[in-house]
Length: 101
View 1 (cartoon, rainbow, N blue to C red):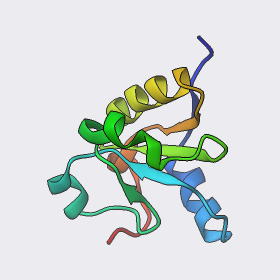
View 2: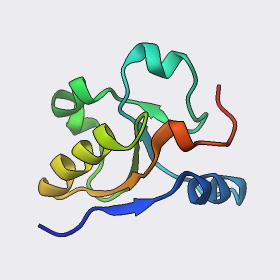
View 3: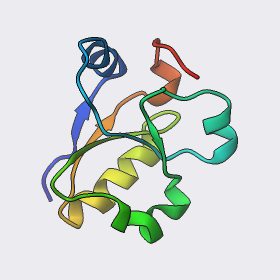
């Protein structure tokens, strides 16, 4: 299995500041999402990922986000095995210095 690509929170923030359109998927649970998330992110909890995978386009690239990078890493492994293009945001929201809503 090939390595999961990674990106750090600073890189994500700078891409967003440059106006890049990123497909950020936040796989945390609802209480975590509500306590603060990246504005551009889409909420898709890991517990629902398998059931809702059809909502995601295999031609798009996704950056997976969670609290620390663990769950998003698991989501990446699962999705990559199914042919999705995914990158894990290492350090997760614990390392995120940008704005949250």
